[in-house]
Length: 288
Image (tube, rainbow, N blue to C red):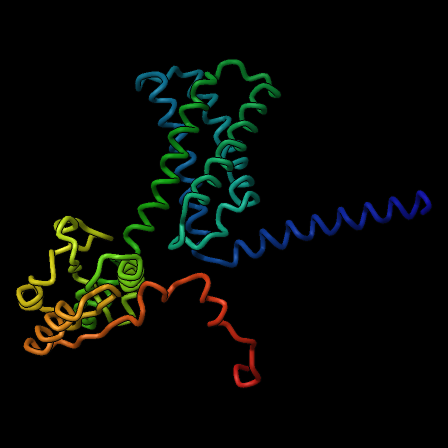
């Protein structure tokens, strides 16, 4: 390959990288929700730096330090903006925020703080305490992480409030993985029409505990009282090891109270990973 061809190949790769970055920015600004999150984070960034300075000086910031702050604040926000976008801080849907997203926040804040610290040394700004950057890093990471967690927490309640009066009150029989997964899905998706109220389980030691905020009322002998006091509309049995006597008690109580009673088939193997591939099939023409 000639020297000219090599330069041309490198030029094409550079152009492709630039185009990819431009496409990322364009795609980002097409989402109004991402833009709102982005603006919120930038506001927190500016506020965090100011609060960090107040903490550092006990509320009495020297005038020359304050002047440097206003000089550096736009540059800090610009660095945050670049790091937040290009380090993928807004790729995850906020209702599915997890530990990996918190680590992404730590990474983005850390990189932008290090770039800001390097720029201070580069521009020779001496009268700006480096401890402010550390305080800002801790405060900003905490605020951004907390905002995501708070939204994750209140999101199910907001969705449930929009479906009040339209859901069936569900009593789950069996404190197990299936019962937990069922309750979690009902809580996350109120549009399914089910509102879990609590659990009953044969293990008396579990009484008084809770899963996803749902109370474990006690054993199966409490079913008649729970059906009445909690205004249950439907009973769902997830435990696979219920004996005939207990099953008869649950079913009879449901019939007496005119409450629907359903059971999850073979709950102990329903989510077995060894059986999962058997549930998959190839895409058929009828699916298209």
